[in-house]
Amino acid sequence: MTEHEASPTAASPALLAEFAERLAVARTTRTPIAPLKAPGVSLTIDDAYEIQRRQLDRRLAAGARLRGHKVGLTSASMQRQLGVAQPDFGFLTADMFHAENESVAGHQFLQPRIEPEIAFVLERPLRGPGVTVAEAIHAVAYVVPALEIIDSRIEDWRIGIVDTIADNASSGGVVLGSRPVRLTDVDLRLAGCLLHRNGELVATGAGGAVLGSPVNALVWLANVLGERGAGLEAGQVVLPGSMTAAVPFGPGDVVTTTVAGLGSVTVRNGDLP
Image (cartoon, rainbow, N blue to C red; front, side, top):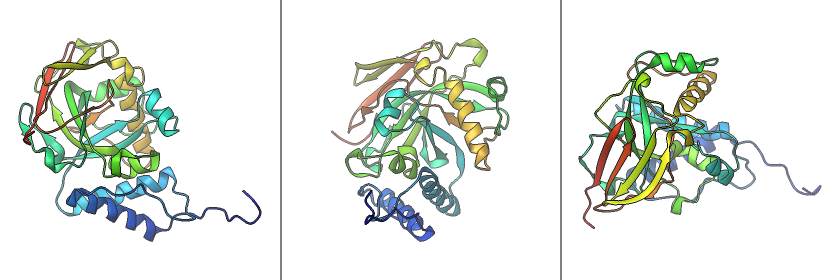
């Protein structure tokens, strides 16, 4: 920076509110927007989470129910791509959940992709900071295979870390399997994953791809939420991160993930090809 260049200024509450409004409108109108930036303003990760929180408050005020959270950016490759050294998180509301094997209206999303995950369903509250792996395991009622429909309200997925956090960690929808499995009955680190789209194997992975174990993502989430004055409640669902790269989820697509020891879950994009 030269002596004639001004240092970036902090984002004002009015600007954060404006970005939250832009993203909310993009979601309801299904019209993507440009990446979030403003001349002379440096948006921080805390700013991004504030934009996210404003959208959650708006949806809760409109009658939505908070049902859990998702963790993203759990792979080293994605962290390198966005220039960060830790995951991010977003919220899950009841209207984001879809029954397995049902047809999901693909047109409700903007540019959907799909990822295989192992979902935790909590039996007890979990609040950090200071949550340990043992405490996290004790809080879990069971796990199920899951498919997360990720989406971006940012044009062409041109996202940086601020964009994806502000955009609720690029979340769209959730499909949970219906066969609950206790943690004592499966080693999540070694649980292999197959992802099929329209009968073709398109990706493979394992639970260990998620921060070494999906449990580590649950611990991270509980502690980061605790630092922000929030926590996880009994009955809530946590998506810890994808075991493979995301794949497109276009009209007519049928996607199934099979996780060793957990079974499978399937979703169909109900839009006509």
